[in-house]
Length: 275
Image 1 (tube, rainbow, N blue to C red):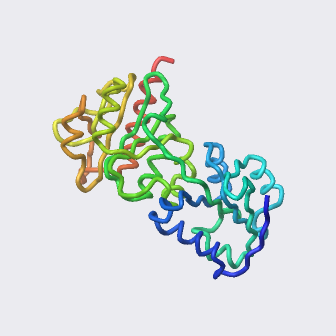
Image 2: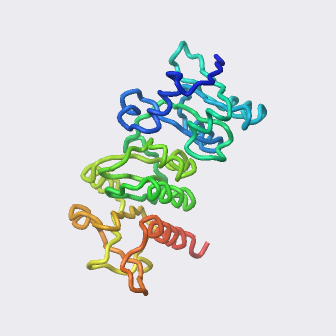
Image 3: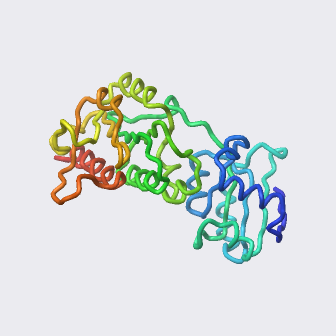
């Protein structure tokens, strides 16, 4: 394990860190991404990701907390398998950190491919499918609800942001690693769900039944689109049922993350009924 001290924002390693935070193309080309915060870093490591470099600010993180993280680290095999720990002062950490209160640690992790075949499902799985949902904040909030409800997976179809976007990781507070998440096309997702015998329930206003009148006790995929355009026809035609949430005010839709939470916990309610 190598330790280095960097104090200048002009250092190439600091510039690379900022590039990885800001540009999805750089993340793809280098096969690296950035995780900020002690909790998020631990969730990522526990999900089997390898650490390339740890940037730590000893003015913020305690040695005991750092040691606890190091005890769980799986170092990448680059650099002869030796890990890199870079210590930076508080003024530099403030420049590279996305937000305050992240406990003085930023990790550069190795990218890992996520595929439908890599998903391990329980009996009667509960899955969230999101079509072309763009905002990382919405995606992160859905992931948190998926984690809280014990969902088996989140499938993001035709994504407009990559799964390693720092805003997505931050808004999910690490749920992007605690819930298996993959990005595929809608066609691939539909074929996979049909093959697995998982019912497809699309959240939409047209030709729909109330969500609480729909049986979600078997294998269930809850499918949602954007608030502005909803779902495309490919999902409407593939659906086993169309479901909707009552809207008793003047507006006709909820934020996608709120809708996801309502529908997920209805599935939880049904599955726990009578227990």
